[in-house]
Image 1 (cartoon, rainbow, N blue to C red):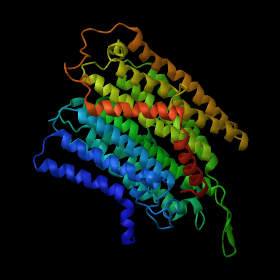
Image 2: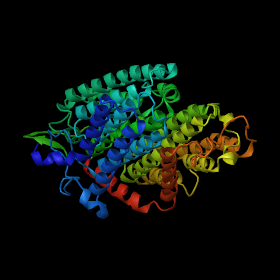
Image 3: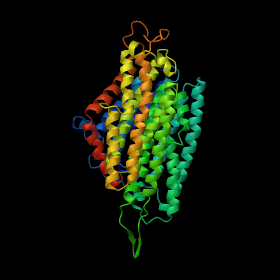
Image 4: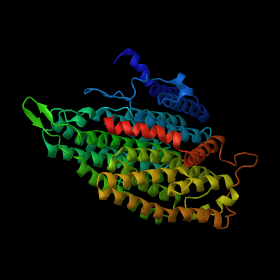
Length: 527
């Protein structure tokens, strides 16, 4: 690597430096959570601004770390990393999630034990996600996923005194280790079939494919391994117990951030290489010509069925839940099914719709978990029924939570509606252009599941606004606190999420235009 090119990784360097600084402050005896939180918020905010500048936002051009000629230039057959505009979009998604959680966590008790561990691991997990977004090699991609995975296993149990948190951390670790083993085994099979793990080589089938069956089995193992990360059914069972047992701020990060890392890994492996492979010309070496094997139909059917099953089961089980965090966990599983529609279809409009859905999910789902964390800190129990009268006694929290739930349900004037409309429209369009009726039924399944989800979101709204408040629950917070016990950090994070949900729901065009251009290039070039 050219020495100058190290500057291209400045956003990642900010995060690594901040993580090391947090651990150093802890060693030096600093105990205040606010000090660790300020470092984390500052590093994630600075990295986010740099990524936005790299995407071409002119007012922030002085913060750009990448020459324009580097972005979307593609990587070589031996490259470990490559900078794509879609990868930069996902870096913005990852950093937005980390910023919301690190900002909200400033409202935790000032002398909370393990605060340095929490913030340090949060930064390291975000660093791993940033590296996923620039991966150009399958092994590099899986190693970057593991950087995030190891950090999040520890985050779930960082308090060390919560038995449910430790149980959740152990479950997460065991399932994570299994998914890693399956993913690397799949990568080894692909290496046997293609002779390389470079994503560009996989896309072009350089030298031809030595064994079609070996490649298909390798892709199958990758679907299973990455399916655990994305919480696809039937690889989802761990998620509910982990989200429920983890500290709620950690649950917000898992649902709003790390899951998106797995989705982008699906983009890299199952949209880039496979979409290109189906349209490549016959590879000729001398007088021997080998036509690339078309994996796409098999992958489309597999991922499409997984999307339908994930949407449906997630929503049905969410209907049956009595606890708020478990309901949100099953809802998060169903949302993964919507995202998979874009991957199954693999067209530029579908990919753009799925990416917008992913960005929307950061604010909707992470924001919802942050509201739950704030309400829990006020003394409200885990049951949905215990949220009685929340909208009346705490209007700010009630309105914020209502907007997040309505957006998750896909109600108009929210970003959840816009993202689903674009995604489902892309599925219908693909069914007419490509003559694939299966894509049309993916859209129908998405619409029906969106309608189904309205029932359990509406149940929460009914409890908050139509049932009498429980006077025994101290929702008013300590006297003299302008935030009513929420804290300034958590209040600001919730407000940012609400503003994003409404702003992107009313006027999504500037953000969606950037996503659309990035998705179009990604599908056309495979990187």
